[in-house]
Image (tube, rainbow, N blue to C red; front, side):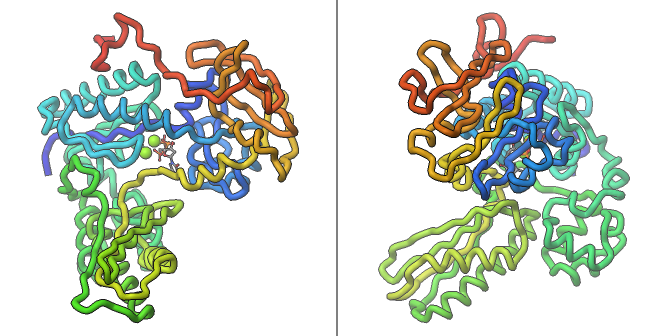
Length: 459
Ligand code: TTP
Ligand code: MG
Ligand code: MG
């Protein structure tokens, strides 16, 4: 392990919700919840103001509404999140060729490989400047962790949240990790966590005390061995630039095509188990399960399913793979089978939200006064165009966003990232003067302010 804290982990604060607050001045400092608003919707994220009420990612939306009835509820705008993610990743790539994105709002950067930091002081400076640059270019805050390993850098950024920087001095890692929950360690998902808890192991110290042999006995060779090393704060995983490196898959080609459907099913289960063993050994967990099937005629198809949260649970992967297999026709025989799990915590819940966005939004607000429109089951097609939180343009009032719609009406708040909090107006859903619009940039670049490369002067 290196002896300088030159691995940086960046994670944007309440990412989707912060983008919404930056876009919509009336929501700054307020509880904002972004997610699927339909009956089966889940929370993608909540602003820190909303977290006070206990609302968090992956919570059913119905529960969030009970906890924070007065929050603003918005449907994600993936396009703008992606644009901003690209701006942030571009700033990271200026620091080093070794940038490993983990999701839209998060990445590791090897500062040493980029030649921009070599010791504590230089690393701290780079981290602080990065945060300032991110703020200048995107208008948003990100938290930075610095340490001598990926594991500790990520723990550091978590501690830095929100809007902070934490540097873990080399040599202090074990003392810091010791009292923490085993779940803090990479590769300890809910399933492994439960397993360890049943064995009486809750903290990292207890994990280290259990010893390597006991962990291997409990978790198998690869996983037990890897976890013991992590418990001792040994983490040699390099920062890798390719995203592909974060997915794990296994496949088998069969000498003789398999025709028996039950046998195909068993092979898939076996591959799922093997895939999870590899996944765990690599300290990963993933949300997307992929099944690959090559048929007798060499036609190859892949099917995938994205879970609500990352998993390293063999039962969950097995079930998902079996479900995927259900949708594949294997009559004629199967030549190759593969199962993969994407370790990227890449929260593209677009499938989920695409459906939610199409549903009628049942929530609306008028000038501070909460006003619930009863959700009509039979929404007119015109009403479906107005998705809560999405951008619109009115020929007379300009740019705004949909606050809610129902009963043939749509309420729009007219404001832009640069304006004062705006006014709300209500229109008929089929008002010809109102149209869906593209998001506006969060930061307007002015000459002399931020230059094109996105760096700022001292300040
Ligand atoms: P996170 O970085 O986990 O969360 P966050 O940025 O909202 O808040 P913070 O980091 O300050 O704790 O996730 C980044 C984005 O990914 C998040 O804004 C929304 C999305 N996301 C989901 O859609 N579903 C999820 O379950 C999670 C955890 C995140
Ligand atoms: Mg984040
Ligand atoms: Mg993140």
